[in-house]
Image (cartoon, rainbow, N blue to C red; front, side, top):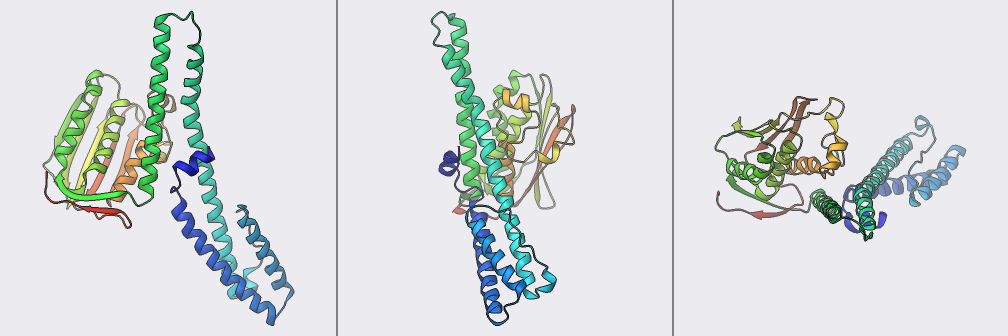
Length: 337
């Protein structure tokens, strides 16, 4: 899986990692130069020990061992004490980043392993020549469903990687946001009609300057989430209004809701508030991470409030004119649609 990580997701955390590592090396080079100068002119025992410990710590970090700390009393080192504190802080930051990377790889491995196990198991079962036709068809449907789940997972991972690289194309142009929301609602009509859900739609005529394609993914994710977790006969409310120069969109459902314990983690990668239902419905725990990243790119905010068993409300607040994120590949729009 580490090969998959390096091949498919080279940008996640690496931009920050390179910047942090560059700063780390510069600070430590400066620290070692100062320490060597002081060692030459005043070779005290404490400075000799610190110099040797510093070299050993750098050697460990070069090998990927980030759980290192320079044990020394900064109060007795003057300006060198600041460098020691910086060294320890940066080593801790690198250690945290490595833990996040390992956790990410572990999550990806887990998400891929589940559908692959199902596909392998049912493929082996299909070898049996005395399987009834109906059972064989059932197994084939499961394999097809799990294959689609894998495809969606890889697509979302690549999408999130691109968004986090800050090099994703960002084309801000004026368009009617209320029309876009209405189209998104109609696009998932088969799903909410199949569950006999009632849609309460109140969309104020609103023109916004933003990346239409990216925001379309926000509404699709939030609407599909609402439909997925709302029981038959429930209600989904979609509202849009302008207030104090900002655009407010709210999608509320009468679904299963989210517990107070899970609510703060909703937008984290791979987090699933209802793990059993998410897995059964093909969820990967990436949809809301993508929503948050896109809203952040537009200079907006997304939040959720919920009570278990009573439903969930997602609120998206956007500026009327989005400011493209630094480093993004920008395009220019012309007219409102």
